[in-house]
Image (cartoon, rainbow, N blue to C red; front, side, top):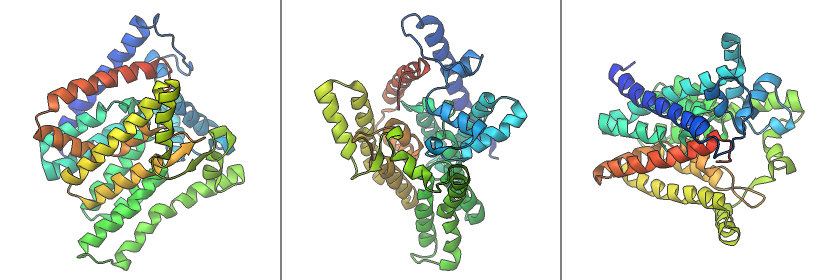
Length: 367
């Protein structure tokens, strides 16, 4: 454990939590009469109850009841951890928040360490700030899989850079069982080993990486035992219940979403596609400011998976799915520092983060 990295990460993390508590108080006690809230009343604590919306309920139900066909799109690691920690806390909601918020700190710590090693402490601190105050970072604080996935991904990259491949592969397999984006680590790590071996593949060294995609067989076995369909995670998404989600060419749904905004003035569609296309600019920046091919592979493939997904010809979830694409935060931090834009960006991102947190607390759809 690096003491200075821990302290710097903890200071930004605690600041973020204090500000989030302030926003919840502001929303519930001051703006409550103006903004009618839709709450699920899953916990008597106002802070926890204010943050339980949408997918959080799905993860809690899976942890308590197991899988059926409609639950299948949600990967098993977060529900498993919630159930395990419920034995310690006695309450699944407390367990869920404990898991995701501890995972968020772990993710921030390893992000700081990764960036510090190549770009220095100032860039590392700024990168952690960008992560925690990203416009849609509210999902990190709820019972969603983003923080858990990011903790596994960042720690896997950290140990892979140290050539501790057994641990990196194990963490990569955990990431793949947390959300489908985790499978991308197989390709990123394969590239890392290719470069380590002088631009050659070493099959003896590389074959253990197959455990990352192969870990999905654990999820398939679980679904087979509980739903009778080992591929239920894919079949369920392509059903009426989930809006016939399927893959198409990259960006197809986003252009259709923009047309809906133009035709129907649906501002969520503008938000959805706006976040997606703005992040493409961040990806382009990354090719200049992130000098690590493995990170770029994770960034591009991790973006293309949700960017190519449509639901009834419309996209769903890009403002949340891009949260785990941390190389973009590194590029953004370096670009902002180089151009003296850190103060301006900080003001803008905190303002947007605040608005989105308020919208989330009252139960409105964000992503």
